[in-house]
Length: 295
Image (tube, rainbow, N blue to C red):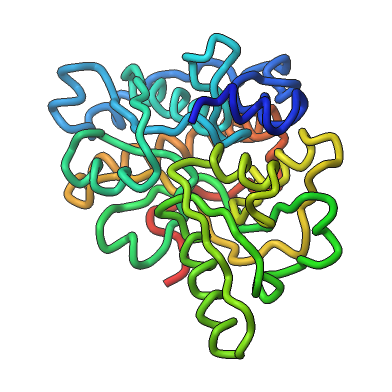
């Protein structure tokens, strides 16, 4: 699906924000350039030190965490800006490789990427496969058209509704679990539509194909704000967990280097400036942690 098609379906003030920064905060001052830490650089794997490059798998359509700039090529947002700052502290250049959400864990395991960052929750079952360096606390929320805002307030209201979710996400699991609850209670089933990316989910809701999109609260809130009142974030956010940077479980020193580089950004105020730029201060962590999600 082309982003321009989704933008047309939603209107100029809606999904167009996925391909252009429509007031997303890029006019604010960016965080200052970071000084290289030789101590942390020395922790990097030899391959990264020799190449001078950190290959990071990232998304491109989950604003304000990550999306395309007006050139439709450069990725901008909270996540790429944080990673660039981490790279400066580590003394390497960060390059981004576009990857689908459900390919991130396998890609890091297979070392196709050194790291990955794409609004992935640090959950125990995922920790069995990769290590997480947590950078932001978040939750999940529901997004609906204005006409459905009075009838959908929580997951319990999804019986008989059509729900759009992104493949491989915790929200996709939530929709399937709710479908089982509805069936067990003798209520109409939840029809779950699974899409490869967020654009498909938002287009489904904007065109009426789906009643609800379940996604990360920052993106749900952002899209509601960009919709000119046509979309509403409803109910209370749920399941508060951190987002984490994915690292191969065997690369303990790399995880340590990334965690300590992120901590330097927190300590010198750059982390707070980046979050403020993207209006995401509410998700700030006090400390960069490894595998800090709930057990």
